[in-house]
Length: 183
Image 1 (cartoon, rainbow, N blue to C red):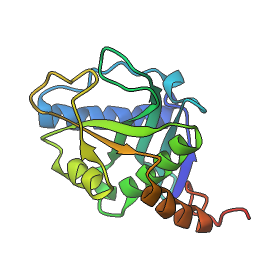
Image 2 (cartoon, helix red, strand yellow; image 1 turned 90 degrees about the horizontal axis):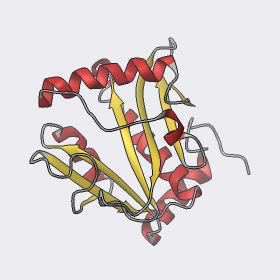
Image 3 (cartoon, rainbow, N blue to C red; image 1 turned 90 degrees about the vertical axis):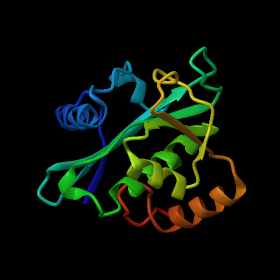
Image 4 (cartoon, rainbow, N blue to C red; image 1 turned 45 degrees about the vertical axis):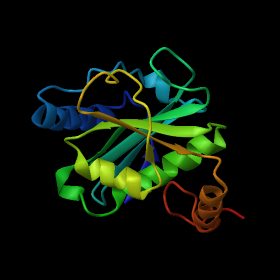
């Protein structure tokens, strides 16, 4: 597996986005209508990752974008996770957890204080991933904050126990590709 930083408007990102939109429509009756712009994910104010299988096929994605206090319920210092997705054939390999850890590391390094995300009741596997990764339910925010099926979660990036776990991970890998970290 190869994890790469890619722009959100890259053809492979568009392909995975089309696939996740189909899945959203299957689960909720419509795709995600949240406004997304490729520039939202440009470092240092965001990051977008794609995982490629050994044959070069894009199989998973995820990104974060900076958010600040707004009428939609975001807080200063938020890093919002978007487009976490693993194609059906690649599920169960830990790819989403790997992407999530890399996104958290990147957001923390960019000075973000809190990771936030919105998912829904029809994505129990996503809820399980986030809660098992230390995310807790928070007051709804964002485009779908008034939707019954919406669920919002957050995790502080400055928690001492989280920083200890991250240090242990980044001491052995670069946090993106799994390659040994530079000393």
